[in-house]
Image (tube, rainbow, N blue to C red; front, side, top):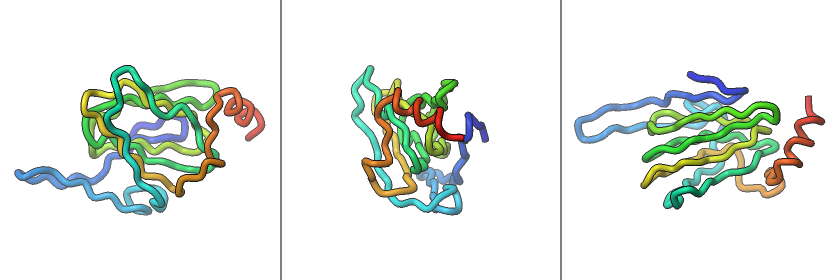
Length: 138
């Protein structure tokens, strides 16, 4: 397990078979929160990025279900990147971390398991607002 800030790369279970591998994922077991929403990003054009926001309370588990991409994490002081390219590895992103997803490979699919349903009020979409909130939180 690799840690960046309070975010960790987790290795999920992998059941190998000659007919193809399987990775089961259970909320509260393999994922450190109950899963309230699942969504995935795909057909991201070359050179485009996704994310570009932070969440106040939401936690996410980000998986490269197919292909690869890079996740840039920013705690308001330091930026670090995590390269995801294995469907049995997942990045656990904690609240109040700015994230950007970049450099999607052709056919790359990003699956996200989220701790909350979609709630626009939980998003911080302006980086300067994010920095201001980070300065006022312990």
